[in-house]
Image (cartoon, rainbow, N blue to C red; front, top):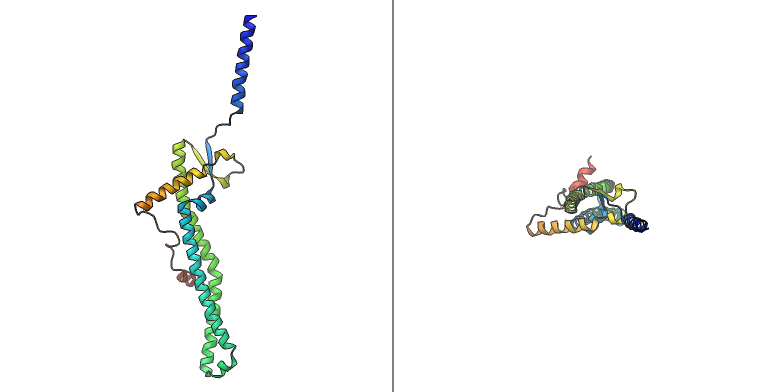
Length: 204
């Protein structure tokens, strides 16, 4: 009888341990990082985004200036009194200016999005370097052998997400680089002058 009670107690204890083990979350060797969030929330990403917006504003300014010049010529061409005051040569010159500005604006508009896409790809490539480096540092510290981009996963448990830690690591790297004067130029500042890019694109 004593043996029976001892065996029963041992069985209960074993079942209890097994139940605890099954209730615990499974261990994993993989973590995930949200690439987009790293760009949106990190100091490196915000700096790059600010540079990208600056480039867009410069290009908008060029397009607006060209459009204003074109509208000014159109206004003159529609003013019969003004046209009557011009010599035939001057009117012909005005017509030529109108056509040139119209073609120039059309070329600028056609290449506007192409140039922005190029700038965006450069930004993504630059940010990938920062995110990769920070992910590696976090992974080594936490002994995680593999970190995946969130976009590569169909599903993952939220406990596997280390995006916040990666952003924190990126920000620390940024602060150190900023303090030491080692911050690289943004991808937008390394690109040619916006008007030069538009002019080059229009002649391709």
